[in-house]
Length: 241
Image 1 (cartoon, rainbow, N blue to C red):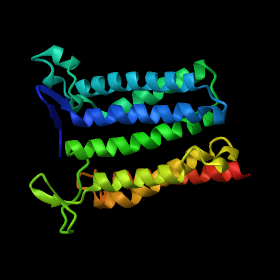
Image 2 (spheres, helix red, strand yellow; image 1 turned 90 degrees about the horizontal axis):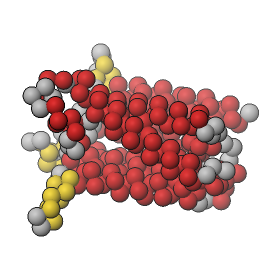
Image 3 (spheres, helix red, strand yellow; image 1 turned 90 degrees about the vertical axis):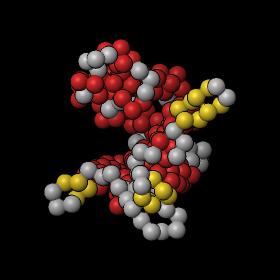
């Protein structure tokens, strides 16, 4: 784990740096191939920037609403740059809502925009898992396999690496520069990416050690992955007609 990168007197939060690099690389890739989907790179940039700003604000507000007692002694700590004071679900909801509003105002075609954003989402998936590996988040279940890593007083599956490799493999297979992908119907590229990612999460979730469990020991993330996979297959069937 490498939560802090020390360069002389400068201390950099390495997980956050990884995320910033992932956003930059993913956005550059999405902007490069957006014209293939008849979408302006400027719209992609503005949409992602709007979603990120709204996501950060929403994540901080959601965290404050969940843990108000942590900010009562020092209200200015709400402006802290600590990424640990963010609520991921609240941030995702705010980001999606802001991007939908932007898309509707600019009258952007939904499926074409989602296809254009797919390279960005694929690179971001890799960056998120590498960031988790650096911070120790998203840790795996205890194991005795030779490649296990020592974390939180136990030898655990390096699930962050598993998921990073899976995300990299999906990006490689669905590389946006492949000629045959350009002839796909609008939405198919995004749906296949989403279905592949859901299938990977469905399998790899079994190795995680911090899963939210439902009654009967069912993992919530696997239930969500099943639902997303079913939705993608349904939509792909509709597109094939």
